[in-house]
Every structure is written in C-alpha cells, then in structure tokens.
Image (cartoon, rainbow, N blue to C red; front, top):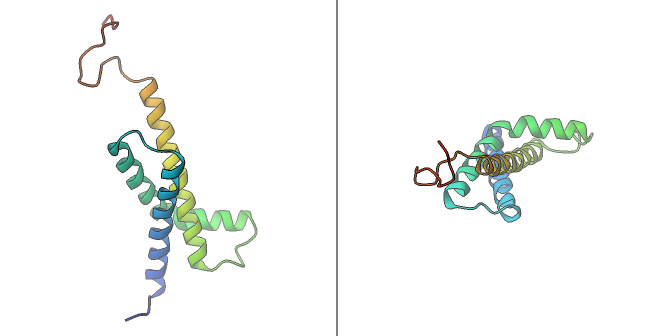
Length: 116
C-alpha cells in the first residue's frame, strides 16, 4: 500500500503547500494573539487547498514554466502561494479593522472619550 493514486498525490501537494505557506508567513508577520494565529492559519490552509491548483497553473503559465513542472510541483507551488497571500490579506484586514474599530472597548463598554 505504498502507492499513492494521482488524486491522493494532488491532495497531498495541496495540503503540504498550504501548511508550508502558512508556516512561512508566521515567520514574517507574527500574529498578535493565539486567536488571530489560529484564524489566519486555518484560513491560509483552507485557501491553499481550495485555490492551490488554480494559482499554481496560473503562475506556471505566467512564468512559462508549466512544461517543466510536474503536476505535484505546480499544485504545491500554487497552494503555498495562495496560503501566503491569504495569510497576508487576513493580517492586513485584521490590522485595518483594529485601527478603525468600534468606539467600544474590549469588554463592550464605551471608551471615556466616546460621546455616544
């Protein structure tokens, strides 16, 4: 049972690329909390698995290297790219939301300078 069928190989490439992309992103932009880390990691992995094949094919064709890459390499590259991209997008969205957040504090009470 050491043979991996082609569909299994593609799923393995998607999962490995997505996890690698999220792990690499963790080194570059560390999340502020465990909740943010978990949210961004799961979003990155999910996005890498969902968009891995499409992103890999698009990049391989854009760089004109589609004919030298195997299907596994193309999917692995695409999943990692999609995961990294989603990780950074989530980080920016979270930082942007925190900056322009609601006038209420973390515990739901109004801030002292809030007139409403």
